[in-house]
Length: 322
Image (cartoon, rainbow, N blue to C red; front, top):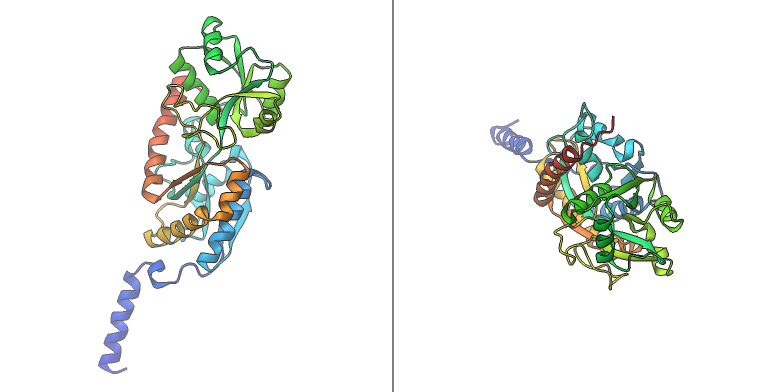
């Protein structure tokens, strides 16, 4: 090798070592695995499958969905935070239960702030409070007035203890100065059935109640999104009712800790474009999933602030899962 060729090789080699993988166009070189911690067929599964399919077109490699349900949607968190390589080829859904769980157990297995690389915030769900059509609660104010006059007698269903909607109702009760009776069920649909059957006064959950509201069997007292829901334009938000509370149980995509910033940027850009597409918007609208896009910096900040809120609320209520 002559001096010029040898020197050129050294310079190019040094540049290759210094440049991030994404800057060299080497990422991705193979399929990317996106872990969905729920069974197939649900709204999050449908939205993330659509997102992965759309992002794969921009990335030039398939985004393969792997369903790994269990442990309340947190079974994948240990793998992401402790076992997976930070090379961008293993990602997972980041949602509030992953952020919350460390504060519910005696021996936390991860720290949601430090043990993941947070990439992009995506969407969430429409939550609200619904009562049977024959309920004496004509509106939200009537519910609060009755609850103040009858402490502990108004019951509401949720999809479980320490769920996002349970904690939101506890926060709302504190702000209104009322005492409510929480009746957890295994899922949103069971809670709707319980409310219709008179076992509880209301259901406070994601939009499993929507078909019954549209059919006139239930009445929606409030929605918890930042803006009124397009399907229910006459129903006020909690913010309109005087509370600075927005509950969408929003989620995003995260990877193992210490991922290369260039790879994070490439993934963020691909998933953002997919999220904003007409195709993914149709999927979200099908399930009343509001857009809650956060770029990488915003999503990192959201997880940090949300972890603080979850810790304080769990400690205040004294909730433990074991």
